[in-house]
Amino acid sequence: MAAEKGLQEQIQQETKAYQEKKYQALVEQIKPKPDLRRNMLGAFLVGGLICLIGQIFVSFFLGRGLSQEDAFSATAAVMIFFGALLTGLGIYDNIAKFAGAGSIVPITGFANSIVSPALEFKKEGFVFGLASKLFVIAGPVLAYGFIISVLIGLLYYLLQ
Image (tube, rainbow, N blue to C red; front, side):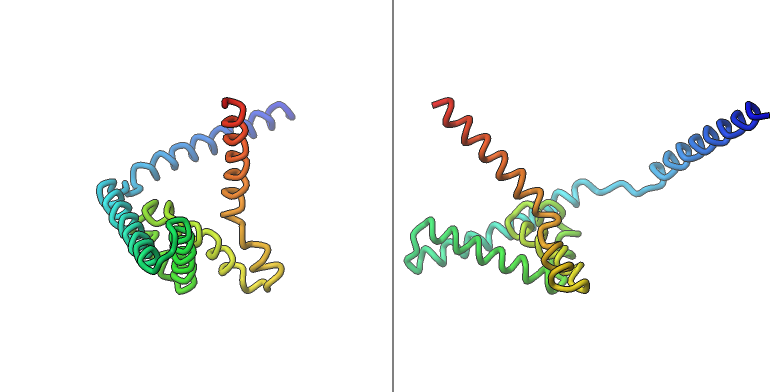
């Protein structure tokens, strides 16, 4: 009796696994395929536009007498501000839907990755919502970026 019950459970599990596998195969057939050319064009255009805007700011700051290093720093600050502002206004998400990586890779995408979770959890309060979720996405990027930069610096030091 117990062996028969165990056999029935095994058959049910295998049937369920088979049905799940068939369902996933059907989903893959029906799911629309992304238009690679449109995605690449959107990423190229938006990424290029963000870089063009950044270059305009660099030229503006250099024209005002800032050193090259200061102009780059000021441009990064301005681009982060605009990325955060557009995220707060709900515009950057629409840009990201169109451009994909073209809007995520530049520094404005980094600002978006910090501001988006903060806005999402704002309703939970400033401490447990906004402050605790501020670096949910960007935190691992910062942590691994720091670790890799230390390792590369150490490797550079040892090879000299």
